[in-house]
Image (cartoon, rainbow, N blue to C red; front, top):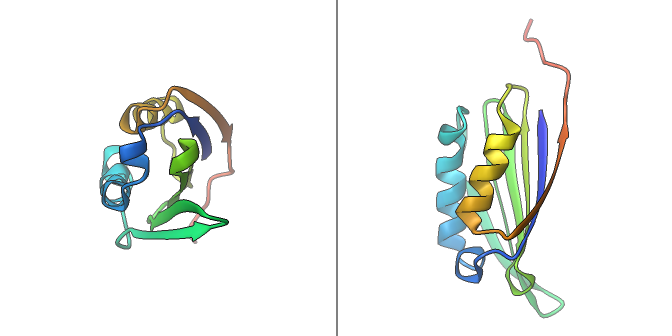
Length: 116
């Protein structure tokens, strides 16, 4: 499964806080039944005068990535997994966690992978 979330109107203090983003990436996998295979990586940088934060965590099932534009109160979250999960529940949880006022999501069903 592949869940893509575009969120607007989030809490600027959360969206602009790299430590909060790290904690999100560190705890989210277990909360949705997935297993981390690496520590989260979070990068803060400035592009065209605007602060941006990006991060990811590798999972046994694939990855979670996040791209944030705090000044615009905009976040893009990508949950990609070869393991089934409840995308509506995950989207709701992410909306609450970042205090988003508007969320658009898109779900792509991927064929299951097999390990031979």
